[in-house]
Length: 120
Image 1 (cartoon, helix red, strand yellow):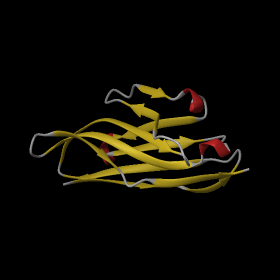
Image 2: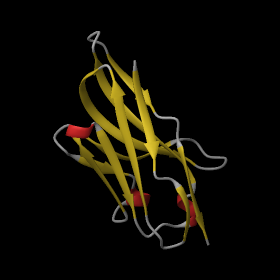
Image 3: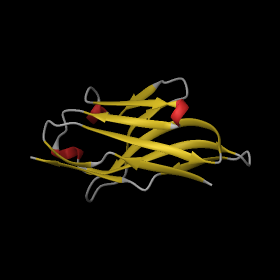
Image 4: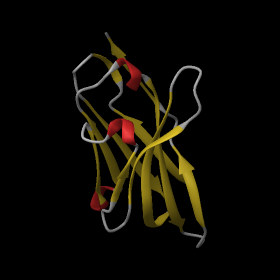
């Protein structure tokens, strides 16, 4: 079994910052690409940022220059530093990870989501 546990969401004012964390645990042999996605009210889930095993990163245009994704492989954890937050960033943020588990199967796993609310 593999679990992803997110933390760090909350309520913040426009211009504020939050740092999300997502820790993977369980039957893990290898952790490949990790990413953050979000789903705002009445919207489809969208990719926010992705980080590969070599620390290559990609970002949605809407967050470039404001959000930074990073990972700590020793802790099986991915982070999302969010600065200059705007009301449009309000959403449930989900962590995703591509994981090779102990039965030698690579699967995509999702966290339960963490709410980020930005007030104007």
